[in-house]
Image (cartoon, rainbow, N blue to C red; front, side, top):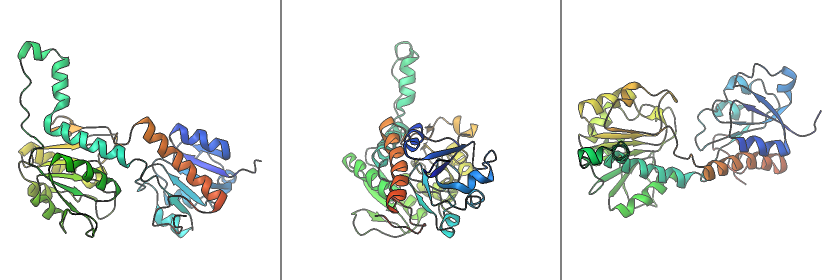
Length: 320
């Protein structure tokens, strides 16, 4: 039996995580969080885990020696952090290394939603420019807009910094106002929506954010309004959004995330005033490699020093 710590990988994860873990740890790979193919003896030896997806309390309860869970991504709502904290298990995530990529993608998605560049390129590729004449003028523009950011954390701040050169007004809504920004604060999401005509949502999935962008918020955003969501699909009431886009309650939307990924409602796909991406905001090779390295470096730091690099606030250890 190896004297290296045994690390559990439930389900699929970035290949770089697996390759780097194998250099230092013994690996136990199972198909999913049920871990049905693992024996009780194997599970009793697991001291670490990495995951890209679900890590429920039912799995944590079967791992008596588990010390650390490395979650691949800045969001870690798939991991039951309350159960982990109750067992004294530290959970880590991968903040900061993906901030720039997600912020860049957000601006691209916003511009594509407003100016319909995807449809324009398809028009050219299909030979329609030559046969039918110029592509129709886009009905929307970024010029003169007021942009509200739902969630002004690390990524939200990067989005704001990229928006500033576009000469738009910026406002935001978070649980508490920040003292280090010049942007207007709104203490409710409806209030923010009423004050702007573009809303960008970049918040994690929590009981407070789930379904937060509802019919009332969309109504407040208005008929010239545009919604961009690059946070979590659960934040948006999808039936309400579909109805708002169909009825003209808002003008357009751009989505990189969905409530039941990878399943996207056909009603969304059929809408002409919607730009859709398959959850690719951080999906470049350099960024995903950096995320993978941080997952592994967290586990290495834990087993070498007892101090994880980027623990989440709900679990008992603070950054070194």
